[in-house]
Image (cartoon, rainbow, N blue to C red):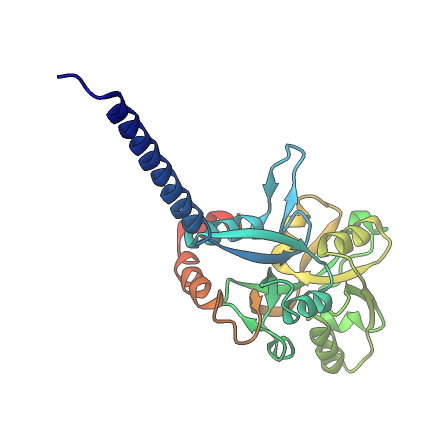
Length: 263
């Protein structure tokens, strides 16, 4: 049977039309499916502890790895932002410029007035950073907080550890000089102590333990505060991200996978 040439043309046009419709439907579906992933804006500090890009060009750090684990599982795309100053970080969060502050913030009553904390991620003591005897003209490190009287202690500007120093002043009934350093992360402050620019600083114990490997000049054995719950901060009333992330964190922090991140 001979097929009419006009029928061939009509059939070809029909097939071409069907292919175009199929491509269009697939494109719309693909686009819509792609936009189902939400973008979450994460604010942290740029340092070896939380987030940095190594010499090999790869991202690393505890907060980077934990955020990646959470967001990969919950299918969020991540935009990273960096800020060392805690007060400025909270301002950016409250203004809606970022969605989460991903750093180990201690759960203090003062910060609770400003933010909504995640489920506790870690529990960490507060330690005094000072130089070892061999790196401090044979002067032995302070082991009793009563000997902090009259000393100058460095902390981050607007650090939540400021209240702990005030409490120590009350406990020892004497004055401690407080030097708040703006726009410095804990590592930079520890480096100042290691170099001998300042004699004392207060940071959280996990950061100190991590950085003691890098700065063997420092002594971190003197604890000046009991273990505190620490975690991330959300805007108050956040229903977009916090419920799902808190639920995931509650599950993950009990696993070996999370313990490996802490190493």
